[in-house]
Image (cartoon, rainbow, N blue to C red):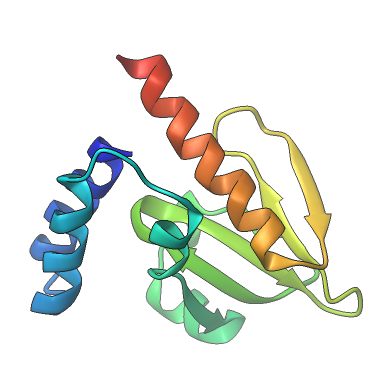
Length: 122
């Protein structure tokens, strides 16, 4: 998670994020332990229309029933599906996909995936 937050702070700085957000990301990169709350505090909920207007859709794979996107640093995202009211995630590493009504459950999966990817890269 150290590298995730460090890279996120650098990306935030390059993209003109607020000083407070950059500072918080840097502080998290200096810690030794993390939990899912450290990730979910950076989630940004965007309606699909706003997401499409702001982001390059060539790098995101959207479910056909998506109505909102919860976006996290470094292109991690969870999609809210219409009708079902379920949060959908497709793993960036394994391609595994699932939907669950509790976003906290899905955020925990994303957090674990980031954490595992750092273990595998060292």
